[in-house]
Amino acid sequence: MFKRIFNNLTLSFFSFLVFFLLIELIVRIIHYTNNGGFRDVKASIMEDDKFGWVLNIYLDSVKSERKNGCGEVVKTKKYADKFIVKFPKADAREWKNKKRILIIGDSVTQAHEVSTDYAYYDRLEELAGENYAVFAAGVGGYGNLQEYMLLEDVYNRINPQILIWQLCGNDIANNRYELDNASFFNNQHKRPYLNLETGEIEIKNPGFWLFDVSLFAKRLFSRILKLDFKYNMGILSFCNSLICLDSELHEKEYKNGFEVMDYLLKRIKNKYPRLIIAGFNTGPEAEQGFNKIFTSNGYNYLGIFYEHVDNIEGTNCKPLDFHWNILGNRIAGEHLYNLLKQTKLIN
Image (cartoon, rainbow, N blue to C red; front, side, top):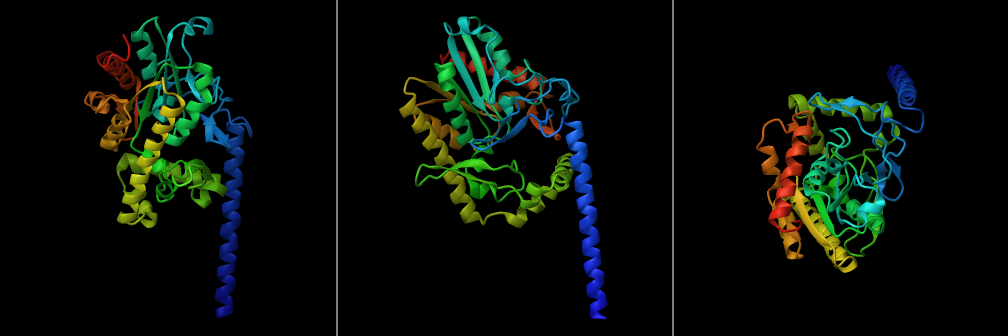
Protein backbone atom coordinates (compact mmCIF):
# COMPACT_ATOMS: atom_id res chain seq x y z
CA MET A 1 0.00 0.00 0.00
CA PHE A 2 2.74 2.41 0.98
CA LYS A 3 4.65 1.44 -2.16
CA ARG A 4 1.59 2.24 -4.27
CA ILE A 5 1.19 5.63 -2.57
CA PHE A 6 4.88 6.34 -3.07
CA ASN A 7 4.69 5.38 -6.76
CA ASN A 8 1.61 7.57 -7.26
CA LEU A 9 3.28 10.54 -5.58
CA THR A 10 6.43 10.02 -7.63
CA LEU A 11 4.44 9.80 -10.86
CA SER A 12 2.45 12.91 -9.93
CA PHE A 13 5.63 14.82 -9.12
CA PHE A 14 7.36 13.95 -12.38
CA SER A 15 4.18 14.61 -14.35
CA PHE A 16 3.95 18.06 -12.80
CA LEU A 17 7.65 18.66 -13.45
CA VAL A 18 7.33 17.70 -17.12
CA PHE A 19 4.22 19.90 -17.46
CA PHE A 20 6.03 22.83 -15.79
CA LEU A 21 9.08 22.42 -18.04
CA LEU A 22 6.85 22.26 -21.10
CA ILE A 23 5.09 25.48 -20.09
CA GLU A 24 8.49 27.06 -19.38
CA LEU A 25 9.73 26.10 -22.85
CA ILE A 26 6.61 27.50 -24.53
CA VAL A 27 6.85 30.78 -22.58
CA ARG A 28 10.52 31.20 -23.50
CA ILE A 29 9.88 30.47 -27.19
CA ILE A 30 7.05 33.04 -27.25
CA HIS A 31 9.19 35.55 -25.35
CA TYR A 32 12.20 35.26 -27.65
CA THR A 33 10.02 35.26 -30.77
CA ASN A 34 8.06 38.37 -29.76
CA ASN A 35 11.02 40.25 -28.32
CA GLY A 36 13.62 39.88 -31.02
CA GLY A 37 15.50 36.78 -29.89
CA PHE A 38 18.10 36.63 -27.15
CA ARG A 39 18.74 40.37 -27.57
CA ASP A 40 15.42 41.66 -26.22
CA VAL A 41 14.31 44.69 -28.25
CA LYS A 42 11.16 45.39 -26.21
CA ALA A 43 12.52 45.48 -22.65
CA SER A 44 13.69 48.89 -21.40
CA ILE A 45 16.59 47.44 -19.39
CA MET A 46 19.25 44.76 -19.84
CA GLU A 47 21.56 42.91 -17.46
CA ASP A 48 24.93 44.41 -16.47
CA ASP A 49 27.67 42.88 -14.32
CA LYS A 50 28.67 46.11 -12.58
CA PHE A 51 25.38 47.98 -12.15
CA GLY A 52 23.00 45.01 -12.05
CA TRP A 53 21.08 46.38 -15.02
CA VAL A 54 21.26 49.37 -17.38
CA LEU A 55 19.14 50.88 -20.15
CA ASN A 56 18.64 48.57 -23.10
CA ILE A 57 20.52 50.21 -25.97
CA TYR A 58 19.00 47.62 -28.33
CA LEU A 59 15.46 48.83 -27.67
CA ASP A 60 13.31 48.96 -30.81
CA SER A 61 11.20 52.13 -30.66
CA VAL A 62 8.50 50.63 -32.89
CA LYS A 63 8.19 47.18 -31.30
CA SER A 64 8.31 48.64 -27.78
CA GLU A 65 5.36 51.00 -28.35
CA ARG A 66 2.63 50.40 -25.77
CA LYS A 67 0.05 52.09 -23.52
CA ASN A 68 0.58 53.11 -19.91
CA GLY A 69 -1.88 52.49 -17.07
CA CYS A 70 -3.86 55.57 -18.11
CA GLY A 71 -4.25 54.40 -21.68
CA GLU A 72 -1.78 56.98 -23.04
CA VAL A 73 0.41 55.77 -25.91
CA VAL A 74 4.07 55.52 -24.92
CA LYS A 75 6.67 55.80 -27.69
CA THR A 76 10.25 55.47 -26.47
CA LYS A 77 13.07 56.36 -28.83
CA LYS A 78 16.08 54.08 -28.91
CA TYR A 79 18.44 54.78 -26.02
CA ALA A 80 21.75 56.26 -27.14
CA ASP A 81 23.42 55.53 -23.81
CA LYS A 82 23.26 52.99 -20.97
CA PHE A 83 22.25 55.71 -18.50
CA ILE A 84 21.46 59.02 -20.18
CA VAL A 85 17.81 59.31 -21.21
CA LYS A 86 18.00 62.95 -22.23
CA PHE A 87 20.62 65.03 -23.98
CA PRO A 88 20.14 68.78 -24.54
CA LYS A 89 18.31 69.80 -27.69
CA ALA A 90 21.33 71.90 -28.68
CA ASP A 91 24.33 70.09 -30.16
CA ALA A 92 27.53 69.51 -28.17
CA ARG A 93 29.27 72.62 -29.50
CA GLU A 94 26.45 74.78 -28.13
CA TRP A 95 25.70 73.13 -24.76
CA LYS A 96 29.34 73.18 -23.69
CA ASN A 97 29.01 76.97 -23.49
CA LYS A 98 25.82 76.76 -21.41
CA LYS A 99 25.20 76.07 -17.73
CA ARG A 100 24.75 72.33 -17.50
CA ILE A 101 22.12 70.68 -15.28
CA LEU A 102 22.25 66.94 -14.69
CA ILE A 103 19.25 65.12 -13.22
CA ILE A 104 19.76 61.60 -11.88
CA GLY A 105 17.18 59.17 -10.51
CA ASP A 106 15.29 55.93 -10.93
CA SER A 107 12.17 54.96 -12.92
CA VAL A 108 10.65 58.43 -12.48
CA THR A 109 13.65 59.88 -14.33
CA GLN A 110 13.78 57.07 -16.86
CA ALA A 111 10.17 58.19 -17.40
CA HIS A 112 9.11 54.94 -19.01
CA GLU A 113 5.41 55.79 -18.56
CA VAL A 114 5.50 58.70 -21.02
CA SER A 115 6.85 59.09 -24.53
CA THR A 116 10.33 60.45 -25.15
CA ASP A 117 10.41 64.28 -24.90
CA TYR A 118 7.43 64.39 -22.48
CA ALA A 119 9.27 63.86 -19.17
CA TYR A 120 9.45 66.44 -16.39
CA TYR A 121 13.00 67.45 -17.31
CA ASP A 122 11.93 68.20 -20.89
CA ARG A 123 9.46 70.73 -19.49
CA LEU A 124 12.21 72.10 -17.21
CA GLU A 125 14.48 72.63 -20.22
CA GLU A 126 11.71 74.50 -22.07
CA LEU A 127 11.19 76.86 -19.14
CA ALA A 128 14.86 77.30 -18.19
CA GLY A 129 15.65 78.82 -21.58
CA GLU A 130 18.62 78.89 -23.90
CA ASN A 131 21.23 79.55 -21.19
CA TYR A 132 20.85 76.04 -19.75
CA ALA A 133 21.59 72.56 -21.09
CA VAL A 134 19.59 69.84 -19.33
CA PHE A 135 20.71 66.22 -19.12
CA ALA A 136 18.87 63.36 -17.41
CA ALA A 137 20.23 59.96 -16.45
CA GLY A 138 18.09 57.37 -14.72
CA VAL A 139 17.25 53.69 -14.74
CA GLY A 140 14.13 52.11 -13.29
CA GLY A 141 14.62 50.37 -9.95
CA TYR A 142 17.96 51.99 -9.11
CA GLY A 143 18.87 52.68 -5.50
CA ASN A 144 21.04 55.57 -4.33
CA LEU A 145 24.33 53.66 -4.73
CA GLN A 146 23.57 52.78 -8.34
CA GLU A 147 22.60 56.41 -8.98
CA TYR A 148 25.91 57.54 -7.49
CA MET A 149 27.80 55.04 -9.67
CA LEU A 150 25.83 56.37 -12.62
CA LEU A 151 26.95 59.90 -11.73
CA GLU A 152 30.58 58.81 -11.71
CA ASP A 153 30.14 57.20 -15.13
CA VAL A 154 28.63 60.23 -16.87
CA TYR A 155 30.23 63.11 -14.95
CA ASN A 156 33.32 63.67 -17.10
CA ARG A 157 31.25 63.52 -20.29
CA ILE A 158 28.89 66.24 -19.09
CA ASN A 159 30.81 68.24 -16.47
CA PRO A 160 27.60 69.53 -14.85
CA GLN A 161 27.52 72.61 -12.64
CA ILE A 162 24.17 71.64 -11.06
CA LEU A 163 23.03 68.17 -9.97
CA ILE A 164 19.36 67.48 -9.27
CA TRP A 165 18.86 64.18 -7.45
CA GLN A 166 15.40 62.66 -7.87
CA LEU A 167 14.72 60.45 -4.86
CA CYS A 168 12.09 57.87 -4.00
CA GLY A 169 11.07 56.27 -0.70
CA ASN A 170 12.01 52.77 -1.84
CA ASP A 171 15.62 53.93 -2.35
CA ILE A 172 16.27 53.17 1.32
CA ALA A 173 15.29 49.52 0.94
CA ASN A 174 17.26 49.33 -2.32
CA ASN A 175 20.34 50.58 -0.43
CA ARG A 176 20.40 47.54 1.85
CA TYR A 177 20.52 43.90 0.78
CA GLU A 178 18.82 42.84 4.01
CA LEU A 179 15.77 45.00 3.23
CA ASP A 180 15.71 44.11 -0.46
CA ASN A 181 15.91 40.43 0.36
CA ALA A 182 13.02 40.70 2.84
CA SER A 183 10.53 41.74 0.19
CA PHE A 184 9.15 40.20 -2.99
CA PHE A 185 8.64 43.73 -4.29
CA ASN A 186 12.19 44.28 -5.49
CA ASN A 187 13.61 44.22 -8.98
CA GLN A 188 14.53 40.52 -8.86
CA HIS A 189 18.00 41.33 -10.18
CA LYS A 190 21.42 41.26 -8.64
CA ARG A 191 22.55 44.75 -7.69
CA PRO A 192 25.53 46.48 -6.02
CA TYR A 193 25.34 47.26 -2.30
CA LEU A 194 27.64 49.42 -0.20
CA ASN A 195 29.38 47.78 2.75
CA LEU A 196 29.27 50.57 5.34
CA GLU A 197 32.10 49.03 7.37
CA THR A 198 34.63 48.73 4.55
CA GLY A 199 33.31 51.22 1.99
CA GLU A 200 33.51 48.46 -0.63
CA ILE A 201 30.82 47.70 -3.21
CA GLU A 202 29.46 44.15 -3.17
CA ILE A 203 27.24 42.50 -5.79
CA LYS A 204 24.39 40.45 -4.29
CA ASN A 205 21.16 38.97 -5.61
CA PRO A 206 17.99 39.57 -3.54
CA GLY A 207 15.81 37.89 -6.14
CA PHE A 208 13.66 34.85 -5.33
CA TRP A 209 15.51 31.77 -6.63
CA LEU A 210 12.53 30.48 -8.63
CA PHE A 211 12.33 33.73 -10.62
CA ASP A 212 16.03 33.41 -11.47
CA VAL A 213 15.51 30.06 -13.18
CA SER A 214 11.95 30.30 -14.49
CA LEU A 215 10.70 32.99 -16.86
CA PHE A 216 7.21 31.48 -16.58
CA ALA A 217 7.16 31.85 -12.78
CA LYS A 218 8.49 35.40 -13.00
CA ARG A 219 5.91 36.44 -15.60
CA LEU A 220 3.09 34.73 -13.68
CA PHE A 221 3.99 36.50 -10.44
CA SER A 222 4.17 39.83 -12.29
CA ARG A 223 0.63 39.33 -13.61
CA ILE A 224 -0.60 38.37 -10.15
CA LEU A 225 0.93 41.56 -8.72
CA LYS A 226 -0.90 43.66 -11.31
CA LEU A 227 -4.20 42.10 -10.21
CA ASP A 228 -3.19 42.66 -6.59
CA PHE A 229 -2.54 46.37 -7.19
CA LYS A 230 -5.77 46.77 -9.14
CA TYR A 231 -8.10 44.98 -6.72
CA ASN A 232 -6.14 45.37 -3.45
CA MET A 233 -6.18 41.62 -2.82
CA GLY A 234 -3.36 41.61 -0.25
CA ILE A 235 -1.27 38.98 -2.05
CA LEU A 236 1.99 40.95 -1.94
CA SER A 237 1.49 41.83 1.72
CA PHE A 238 0.95 38.17 2.54
CA CYS A 239 4.06 37.07 0.60
CA ASN A 240 6.18 39.74 2.24
CA SER A 241 4.92 38.71 5.69
CA LEU A 242 6.52 35.31 5.13
CA ILE A 243 10.03 36.70 4.66
CA CYS A 244 9.99 40.08 6.44
CA LEU A 245 12.52 41.09 9.10
CA ASP A 246 11.53 41.51 12.71
CA SER A 247 10.77 45.12 13.66
CA GLU A 248 14.05 45.72 15.51
CA LEU A 249 16.25 44.46 12.67
CA HIS A 250 14.11 46.28 10.09
CA GLU A 251 14.53 49.58 11.95
CA LYS A 252 18.30 49.03 12.17
CA GLU A 253 18.64 48.30 8.45
CA TYR A 254 16.34 51.20 7.53
CA LYS A 255 18.67 53.49 9.45
CA ASN A 256 21.62 51.94 7.62
CA GLY A 257 19.85 52.70 4.34
CA PHE A 258 19.92 56.40 5.19
CA GLU A 259 23.57 56.09 6.23
CA VAL A 260 24.36 54.86 2.72
CA MET A 261 22.81 58.05 1.31
CA ASP A 262 24.76 60.18 3.80
CA TYR A 263 27.99 58.38 2.89
CA LEU A 264 27.42 58.99 -0.82
CA LEU A 265 26.74 62.73 -0.38
CA LYS A 266 29.93 63.11 1.63
CA ARG A 267 31.83 61.25 -1.06
CA ILE A 268 30.40 63.56 -3.72
CA LYS A 269 31.38 66.62 -1.70
CA ASN A 270 34.99 65.39 -1.57
CA LYS A 271 35.15 64.31 -5.19
CA TYR A 272 33.12 67.12 -6.81
CA PRO A 273 33.44 70.06 -4.37
CA ARG A 274 32.15 72.68 -6.83
CA LEU A 275 29.04 70.76 -7.78
CA ILE A 276 25.79 72.43 -6.68
CA ILE A 277 23.30 69.79 -5.53
CA ALA A 278 19.57 69.75 -4.81
CA GLY A 279 17.35 66.79 -4.02
CA PHE A 280 13.62 66.13 -4.15
CA ASN A 281 11.43 63.18 -3.25
CA THR A 282 8.59 61.84 -5.40
CA GLY A 283 6.57 60.57 -2.42
CA PRO A 284 6.10 60.98 1.34
CA GLU A 285 8.08 57.89 2.36
CA ALA A 286 11.55 58.77 3.74
CA GLU A 287 10.88 62.50 3.22
CA GLN A 288 12.14 63.64 6.63
CA GLY A 289 15.23 61.45 6.41
CA PHE A 290 16.23 62.74 2.97
CA ASN A 291 15.63 66.33 4.06
CA LYS A 292 17.85 65.91 7.11
CA ILE A 293 20.69 64.26 5.19
CA PHE A 294 20.78 66.80 2.36
CA THR A 295 20.64 69.86 4.61
CA SER A 296 23.17 68.45 7.10
CA ASN A 297 25.62 68.06 4.20
CA GLY A 298 25.05 71.65 3.11
CA TYR A 299 22.96 70.85 0.05
CA ASN A 300 19.58 72.14 -1.06
CA TYR A 301 16.47 70.06 -0.49
CA LEU A 302 13.21 70.80 -2.27
CA GLY A 303 10.89 69.65 0.50
CA ILE A 304 7.45 68.06 0.05
CA PHE A 305 7.89 68.25 -3.73
CA TYR A 306 5.44 65.42 -4.33
CA GLU A 307 2.46 67.19 -2.74
CA HIS A 308 2.31 69.80 -5.48
CA VAL A 309 1.95 67.06 -8.10
CA ASP A 310 -0.21 64.62 -6.12
CA ASN A 311 -2.73 67.31 -5.15
CA ILE A 312 -3.66 67.76 -8.80
CA GLU A 313 -6.12 65.14 -10.03
CA GLY A 314 -5.10 62.89 -12.92
CA THR A 315 -1.30 63.20 -12.61
CA ASN A 316 -0.68 59.44 -12.35
CA CYS A 317 -2.27 56.12 -13.26
CA LYS A 318 -3.14 54.72 -9.82
CA PRO A 319 -3.82 51.99 -8.85
CA LEU A 320 -2.20 50.33 -11.87
CA ASP A 321 0.84 52.60 -11.85
CA PHE A 322 2.09 55.24 -9.43
CA HIS A 323 4.42 56.95 -11.91
CA TRP A 324 3.56 60.37 -13.31
CA ASN A 325 1.72 60.36 -16.62
CA ILE A 326 1.96 63.14 -19.23
CA LEU A 327 0.11 65.65 -17.05
CA GLY A 328 2.08 64.64 -13.96
CA ASN A 329 5.41 65.08 -15.71
CA ARG A 330 4.40 68.50 -17.03
CA ILE A 331 3.28 69.68 -13.58
CA ALA A 332 6.43 68.26 -11.98
CA GLY A 333 8.69 69.99 -14.52
CA GLU A 334 6.98 73.33 -13.94
CA HIS A 335 7.16 72.94 -10.17
CA LEU A 336 10.82 71.98 -10.32
CA TYR A 337 11.57 75.05 -12.42
CA ASN A 338 9.77 77.32 -9.96
CA LEU A 339 11.60 75.84 -6.97
CA LEU A 340 14.98 76.17 -8.68
CA LYS A 341 14.16 79.82 -9.39
CA GLN A 342 13.03 80.43 -5.81
CA THR A 343 16.22 78.91 -4.38
CA LYS A 344 18.25 80.88 -6.95
CA LEU A 345 19.87 77.73 -8.33
CA ILE A 346 18.92 79.01 -11.78
CA ASN A 347 18.29 82.57 -12.95
